[in-house]
Length: 633
Image (cartoon, rainbow, N blue to C red; front, side):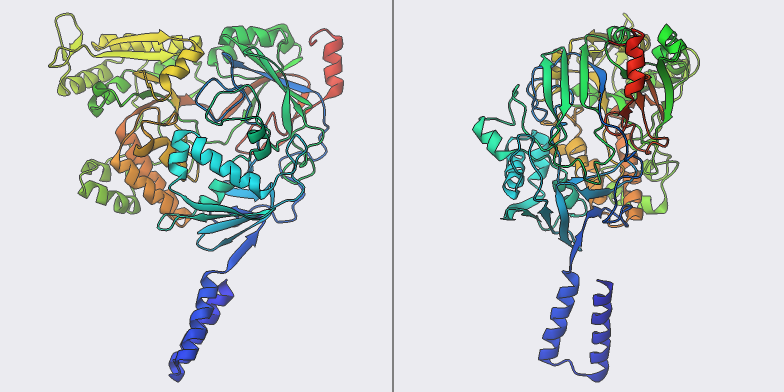
């Protein structure tokens, strides 16, 4: 491409000097220039910016053990139950790992940001402006039922997700793709709509799961409906057995097409993956101690600090380990339901946020294991810090000029989570919150509770399905009641939780939610935070409708260099934090795991994944010893 542009430049310079800009020469030159601009790139992968880490002839990922043995079982736990094998519908509760059956044309790695490599394709073709992409599909890919995957399955899958997928997903997808067509049995072309950013679109469409058209039609399946019939995919694992709502087991497909693919060498090492369901966290912990399952990613700080003193830990039969985690934070938060009038005033949201005392919670409840989340891109180089740079100001100024943002965002430091003292109720934050609510028209009455001019009580319900959160939320509730807010904790079961927090009900005041973002964020921002998805999305649980966020999102999507993307993301981070729709919780930059001493992993883990279900492996000798000792069944 560079050589072509240089040739055009030299030709233009020479012709100008000679004064020979005749009609035939102009046509020839124009043809050369168009060819230079529309040159097709053919590659084994695609990167958002820069070069790919892995060459076309790579043999395996750098962080796997290519000689890892195959065999054995790994088992984990999850909460609640399940009544569906369809992971792509809001109806029903999908079984854990029910999406593991599916693969996409492109796949990323755990040691690289913004890169995707051919999995179901041998190569992809696209122009420099990424206005379209052609995937040259492998001819050896088979679904788990043994039937070949073709371009028709890819086209079919796209159309099913476009018409039957999650409403928020298809709302955004419809604005991106003009057409998809099968050029032949193993070539499929996506053409993108004009006038929109196309930077991420080849990876977006290449990352969609591929379904079997034949199975879907023969079984009369419906992507929008709950179903206990598993969809057939091309992935390495298939359903083995289940006890509905209690346990589900997947087995490695012995005829898996991709076992020797460079992206798969050293991965998918377990013969079986089993998930056990428990009603609550304490029951699950006791189940682990008793050997009901073998791997636990510990999320409870009190359990981590005080619970691992049982005999199998002391004698080394259970490993307790802290492993480095370089991932950005999960964005775990309390979120407001902005659809409710009482939360539409940002002063109310800020006041309530002031009453969550993280410092006291971390010291008293969490044993100091966590750090506070402050940003939607926390623990990454995309996080906004301090006052905005001149480049950020240049992006934010038009939004201020149009009245979408307060001018203070141009000079103030990025909004940070409030800091509290050592006591549960921080008096300084209580005074700040009281002033904010009074300014917002919520006045304390004779009974000590706050009401507005209509006489309506400021009532706040925390909706939660995990008993382990009681010890966190109850002090928060007590602090809010000291502020004059009629705060309560309502605990429901898993089914009620999903029903009340999903569309169309959105029947909650405040609940727990994960604020999802990518390092290199793209179309998912519109799905998770866009106004157009606020009333149809499970991801935009808070119902955010912000013209400023929408405008900044478009700037992020249009960023054409890593520097520009970083600047735009930091500016968007400032805008989203200023909306105060989330009360950030906590994270830890390490994996706290416990597992029976039958598993091994590479010496150096990749920065962005723990990978226990992917590239860890089973040690049969150790497992036999533990079984002989009666530790495991």
